[in-house]
Structure formats: structure tokens, C-alpha cells
Image 1 (cartoon, rainbow, N blue to C red):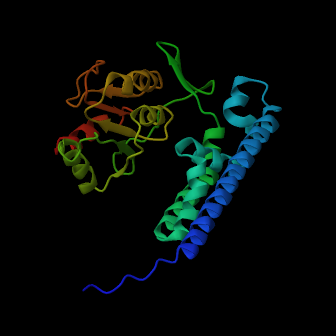
Image 2: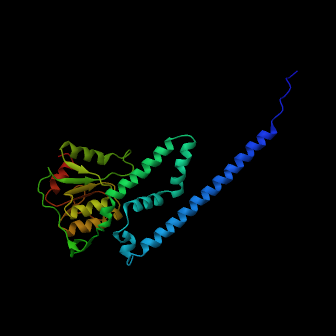
Image 3: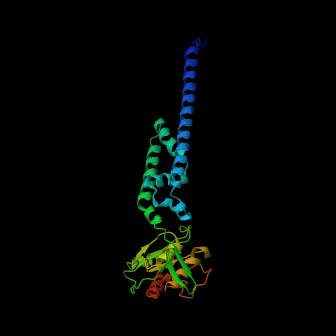
Length: 261
């Protein structure tokens, strides 16, 4: 015969269940309190900084008076739920502390971005050009660099999203590195071209580009005195997915390097 079953301590179980329910209710009120404080804080923040905004430029730049910590939190709130950032550390104490490390790393990275990169955003650089009217940076004329040797030139390139399948530009990149050339990869063709026009870069090439990537930059470089061609040195036409831009003085040596000559 099976051993007799021990009676279940219903009183203790009911007490435990009641404690759990009470804890859940308490946490629910705590969560609501955090949400309420967040909403009050963000409303105050918006009302406070709105006072200095008198133009559209002030709206986008925060009147140039926004502190770095506020910018950091705004980046976080734009990329993910602020409540998630608040709640994830609490979850980490329940078990896996790896969550906490991720959150700390996430916030630290945004602090670095706010301190190092936002001053460049506040500069508000605007590159413009008109056909036959020259190229300008914030209304001031710009020209390409005057460096005449490829060695010592600062170059830039970019890679398509499927670079693991299409390695064509990796070959060109390797040829440039083999010659000891300085090559950077900022990641935005339009900005690379604008920097060539302003003399910050001496040359740039990229493959698999779309018209919207280069239409404005092509004009800006041309109006700044630079040269823009296809990969074979032919006159560049919008729609050509291969582009080489430079100050003109290093253009042919750059083409030769790309083709391994």
C-alpha cells in the first residue's frame, strides 16, 4: 500500500500567496510612481529648455546650452525605451548580472558620444553649392587641398552592406594599404565628398553607390575645384555606381593604385 499522504499546510500556503500578491501590488505602485516621475521630469525638461528656443535652429541645437548629460539621456530615449533602461538593472539583481553590465556599457557609450561628438553637431556645418556658383561651408567659400603627392594624402573609402559577399572594394583597399597610404572609412559617402571639397580629405573612392549618395557631394567637389570621375577615369555621370573624387592633383595616381598599377 502507498504511504499515507501528509496533509498540505494550507494555512502557510495561503499566507505565502497573500505575501506574493501584496508584493506584486507594492511593485505595481512603485512602477507607476517611477513612470509618473519620469513624465513629470520630461515635461519640466521640455518646458525649461523651450524658453531659449526662438528659431528653428535653436530647436534643433537646443540653443547650444543643453548640458551633455541631457543630450546623453535624449540619445538613450531616442534609441530605446527609457523605462527599459530603468527596469533592466532591477531585473539583473534578480539573477543574471550580465544585464547590468550591458546597461552600464550602453549608458557609458552614450556619455562618450555626448562629450566628444556633440560639439561637432553644435557647430552646425552646412555644405552648399550651386552649378557655376562655387562651394560653401556655412556661407564661406571652400576649396580642395593642394597636396600633390599620393603618399601623405588622407584618403577615404566605404564598403557596401554585402561586403562579405562582394569583396571588390576590399581588393582596392588592400592595394592602397600595401602602398602605405592613409585610408579612413567614415561611413557616409556624402560626408566624404564634402570633406574632399573642404580640403579635409585629399581623395575618396567607393563602389556600389546610389545616386542619392553622391548627387550633392559630386557638385560640391566639382565647384570646390576638385575632380570626380568613374573608376576608369571617365567623366562621372549620375547613375554610375563607381566614383573616385580628389583634389585633382592626386587623381591619376589614386586611379593607378586602385587598379594595381
